[in-house]
Length: 94
Image 1: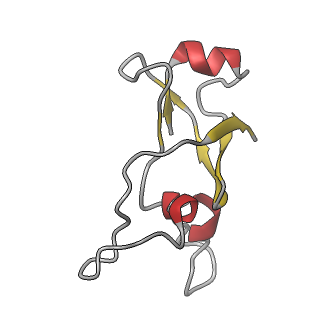
Image 2: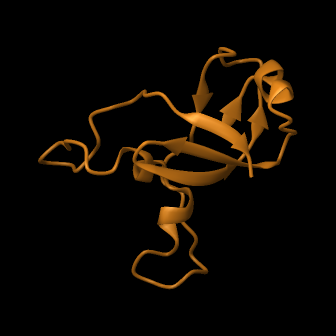
């Protein structure tokens, strides 16, 4: 996940730290990448995370896949994609 250095500093997050990203629908864990290229009030969670070393059929996607945060929301009937690209979340060091 990408986070502004000032925001990360206020949360005690260092580059490469595991970070929880939480919404009312779920919680995932991703590694922090600090960048000045993002607004201090925004974080960017990467999509498509899964773990090929974990057991099928889920391959551990529920641990780090951003879709967990928007589960049970309306999806595009053709692609299955979530309609939301932004929403409120809580971020803290894992």
